[in-house]
Length: 304
Image (cartoon, rainbow, N blue to C red; front, side, top):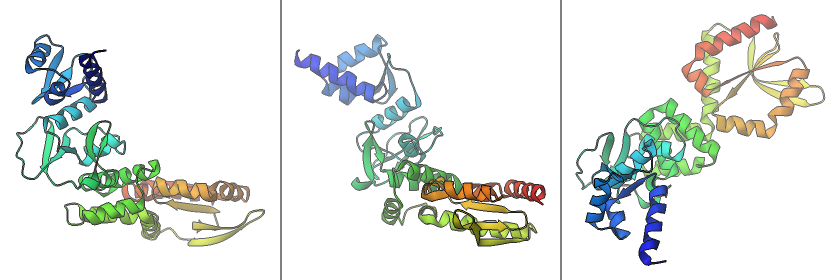
């Protein structure tokens, strides 16, 4: 095989990794001249996808290809950031309508359609490559996305990343410390506190306040229950007369941990003793507390 054949194979592999996108610089590095690239475009084998960037015709256009094209068009220092980075990592299910990309502060690139360009320094320790493109590291991505999305939706991004094992509370705390002076630092601090277990504490306090303001009585918090054949269980909120327990979870990350530590046998023992367990969580109490209270009232009526 000649060296040109080898370069062609490597270029095709690169194009596949880049979702059908190739830059002029990459094509030239593989041995293509400007005339050869112009011929590809003239014969509609390649289509312009941005300044000095092309979509290869045999690959279909996707949100991933548009993201790669935008990054390549902005040069090697461009980095995917914010909700775009969270989506690329798989922490945020919604495809961003606009791609968020950071470039060096001294640069003044021309605007791109569908791209939000920010001038920002990304520390080397906070920049990595995922599926061939430069993107902020996992922990900084979570905090950036939270700053853009707000606390509730940002918490969902953090919760997803924690469940996947992609970040830890410590890595979030470290990333927040490095970016403490940046925009969104206040939300970042809240995300770290919630990730460290504060979501459940917040949910418990909010539940108690909602029960009081809703006029619900006959309950006690953190109450021990003796269960035959099991031992002692503690209910987050216990309505003793109706034998109803309200269990409060923080994020899914914490809920999964609690289940792993023995929720199953405990739930079975409670059911065998005639107790009904109603669950709520941080998101419901923050976004839809009235829905939860209506569900709780209906349950208490059926158990009275």
